[in-house]
Image (tube, rainbow, N blue to C red; front, side, top):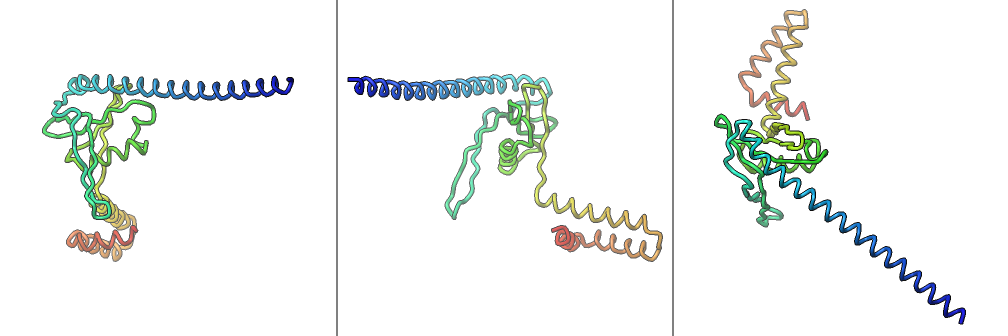
Length: 202
């Protein structure tokens, strides 16, 4: 008799613990979904406010929730991914992409997800710059990525400036003249010079 009572009591405790765990999981899931919905609703509200904000800044809205497709290959198989832009705007003949963000991390270009998203936009769509619009703080950051060619050009001019600086600092005229000849040759044959500079910078 006592054994039956202990077994039933143990069974009820186990059932109670399992119900408590299941209820707690349901509450956690409910709170998570609620937060997601709130965040989504807030994001949507901020996106809608962004239209008026951009127009007040003098930008003309030429596209909203515009859909593009990024086409590429994976093992020679054609793949496409859908891209949805918040806004495309124009000002003084220049075309900009505007991505509206909220939240402490997402509004920063240092955030890897935001940066990768903007990089994909820049790679796929012709633009004169991408704005990361933080509607919570009502600030815009113009992001411009450098292409591989621009990086090479940067190293090329950096190398030229370094040579010129050395030429100015060195007191010996023979070395100054030699450096001047080098700079003229580099300027005259930039492609060959760039390939040499790129080999040095690697």
